[in-house]
Image (cartoon, rainbow, N blue to C red):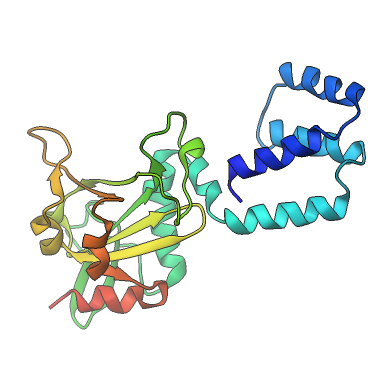
Length: 238
């Protein structure tokens, strides 16, 4: 169940209200102000429960169904910097504690160039983590309103930015849909030589890779399971 399907479900319930309650709800919604987590959907659901059009058990079932289908929708509401720089690193470290934050004690030359590292024998493997959210390219609106499920048929875009292959050994790319997360692991050399690798800005020193509905199959060779993330990074280092 996506947001559009939820809206249709609620509209059908609203249509079952008494005329007086239907008019009252429409009137209240016109002047409604929303501040997270109190929004239009919360107001409609509460109103329907209060009028007995939606009982509590049905509400719980609806909530569970929607949450299960949109496990990662909350990630679309994060600010770009928090999502890309903070959440991505924390997510990888939560998967495997062997991914660690670097500092000068392990790398005297460290100045924040890369995100994480792992120890492979006597070598420090430098890792950059890049996360992107799949959004519909033919819809207007904020990031949340353009969020997509993995099986959606709409054209989508995952834009991995600020790539600097010279500062790390391995990239972990995290692709987020509302109901699924995918992982790709590429060596710095594989990134630099990839045909979808391009300048982020004309004449700039940073690069980008865009994964879309048209080219996602090109990256299947780099796709890894969550449980194999650590071993996949290790295997990229000769």
